[in-house]
Length: 126
Length: 107
Image 1 (cartoon, chains in turn brown, green):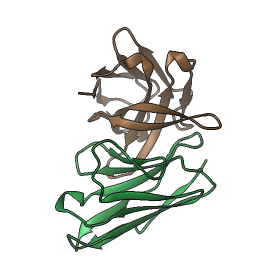
Image 2 (cartoon, chains in turn purple, yellow):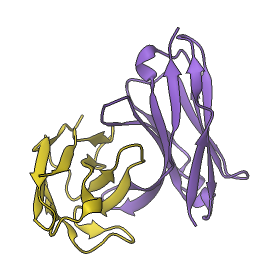
Image 3 (cartoon, each protein chain N blue to C red):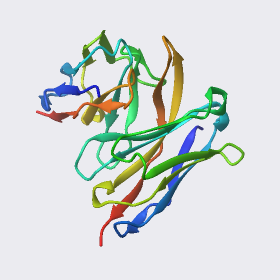
C-alpha cells in the first residue's frame, strides 16, 4: 500500500524553527517528486514547496509566502522528504500535508499530486 | 499567479440528485487541472486529474470536463459519502493554486 506519514509538528514560538518529515512506503520513493501543502484552521489548501526527483534534477520550488524561510530536501536512501521551516510566523500555523507528485510531459513537465499523507499540525504561538 | 475561482461556495443537494461544481481559472491552464475531495478531519483525496481522468479507485459517478479556463466536476447521483468539500487545483503554472472550495451539503 502506498503511504505517506508526516511527523515533526508541534507548538513552536514565533521566530523559531521546526523540521517536518514525510516517511514514504509502498513505492520507489526516488522515482517521484514530493511536495508539501498546508491548510490553516478553517481555511482552504495552499501549496508550500516542491522537490523533483533526482532524475529530473532534484530542483525545488517554493510559495512566495515561505521563500527564503523554508527549505525542502529528500533522502532517497531512507524514503523521507523533509521540510525545514525557519523564522516561523503565526500565519504558518496549519496542518501540513506531504504529497507524491506524478510527472506528465506536455510542453514541459507538469505535476499533479496523487497521494496525500494525513498531515501534521504546526502551531506557531507565543 | 493563476487565480482559481469556484462556484457556488455551498451546494445543497438531496441524495440521489446530480451535483455540478464549477471552477474558473484567471488564465488558461490547458487541461492541467485536478479535483480533490476533502471530508472533515481528513486529508484531501484526488478525484480527477488532467481535467477529466478519474484517479484510481474513484467511482464512475464522478466526472470532470473542461479545458482552458472553464472546468466542471459532476457527481451524477450523490451518495451519502459524497457530502464534503471539493477543491479544484491548477498545475499548469507555478505556484500551484487552488480554488476556495465548494461545500456539498445535504439538502
